Structure formats: structure tokens, C-alpha cells
Image 1 (cartoon, helix red, strand yellow):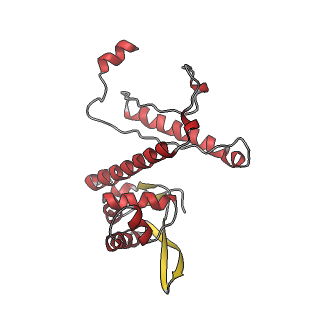
Image 2 (image 1 turned 90 degrees about the horizontal axis):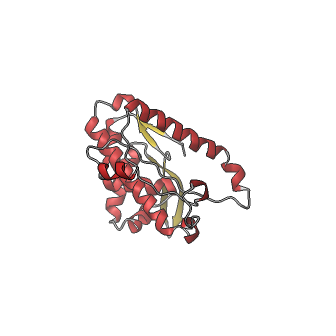
Image 3 (image 1 turned 45 degrees about the vertical axis):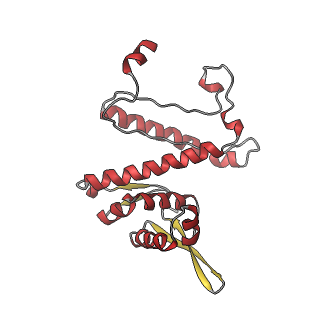
Length: 206
């Protein structure tokens, strides 16, 4: 599976904009599933799931990774073709479709994070009692709303991904380390119209 794949056609954008298809895509990023397995997981009829699978496959967003024969029936196991997707520049004129496809993927990413939080071991959230020093924490959960120029925001994103890449480079060694652990990271950053917090109160606290 590719690390990232460029969406190059309007049909691909439309295919991934559907909420159910976006949810299916997130499942198929995690592992491979048959149409029947997805129907059970998503509590949706098998014919409906198979229709959407064909649409995703037609647009090269998923692929059959292996097959198994069971009771004389060949079962196809589908997997996402990439772990992440990004729009190519030629899709910029399709602002509405681009916005909706991105929104649906973000919603499914947030749902995945919610699931990981609810199923994580209790030790995940046992940060040092009373400590305000981040180096003592076992987990982080924060929401910020910060005014910034577009250039400053993009510079920050570049720095953030640089930090993630630095940690990734140490990942292989950690997998073979008895003290190595698996961590879940989620990152969302986007422009909003109105603040979610009372800005006056925040300034007073600062």
C-alpha cells in the first residue's frame, strides 16, 4: 500500500465524498475486508456495500489484495490503495467537491481517533499527577484556536510533519525494543469562521 496517493480526477473526488464510502475507505486503510465483512461492520446491506466497493475500485481508490474460496464461493478481500490521499492541482477548480471529500475524510479520521481513545488501555491516560510539565505526560489531548497568517500556518504544518518523520525514523528500532510502545497520533488544522471559545476569557487567563 502506498503512503500517499494523488487524486487526479473529478470522479475520484466524487467517489470519496460520499459519507459511507469515506467510512469504508478508513476501514480499508486499517486492513483488508470482504464486502460481507464490511456490511456487518457498518451495519449496511451487502448489495449496497458491493455497489460502493465497485465505485471505489473503478476509481483506483481500493484494490483486491487476495481471494479465498469458501463453500464454492470466491471471496474478494479489498484494501485501500494508499494510507492517505491528497488532491492534485488540476482539481482546484472543483472547490465544492474538493471541500466535501476532504470534510468526509476528516470526519472519518476523527471517528477513528474516538474509537482508539475508547479502546486504549487505562495506562494510556495515567499522566503524572499534578504535573504541568509536558515531559511528564503519557498522553496529550489539547485543542487550540490560534490566529495566524496562511504562510505561518503552512510553515507550522511543515515543521509538524518534520517532527513526525523524525519519530518515524526511530520506529523500527522501537519495534524491537522491549520498552517500545505503539502510539496513536491525530492532527487536524483548518480555518474556521467563528471561535469556539470565549476569546476574552482566554486572554484574561493568559
